[in-house]
Length: 115
Image (cartoon, rainbow, N blue to C red; front, top):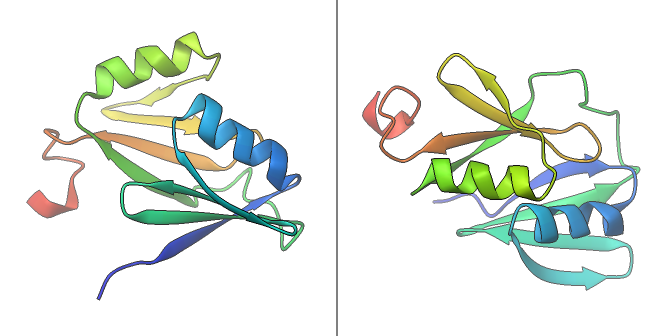
């Protein structure tokens, strides 16, 4: 068993898709009608427009494990993405305020495989 996709609520799925692809480096997978999809690793991200309440002010998030987090953070900053640092954790927000956590694959404290 494995996770197929995560749904992220957005105001404009085409603008959100541009952010996830151009700023974060995700893969653009499919645009069918008003449905937009991106992919990171083996997980699909369904960018669902106007399909629920905003998660902007919540801690609801998904996390990405990176091989070279410091380089990725520098790349994000050069693309105008604000990186929030909370203790040993790094977070970014998409254009709709959805929270995304960034984890270095060598950080055993934040990697559930080592808990």
